[in-house]
Length: 74
Image (cartoon, rainbow, N blue to C red):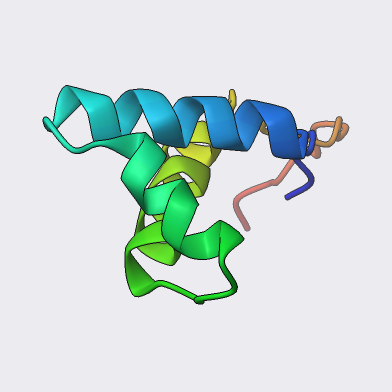
């Protein structure tokens, strides 16, 4: 299934919203990353954001058109 990709800015903004809703300081999470530390917390929020964005995408089902076939009883 192909879904439109979100930009890095959209992902970061959404992760910030989610973290702030939980009472966490997003600035502190980003500050750790900016000094070169690869934090599991930042990865967690980005992964959670990506899952939520994917869940919001509409699901499109494609149904192939087929002709009806007459089946006789023998």
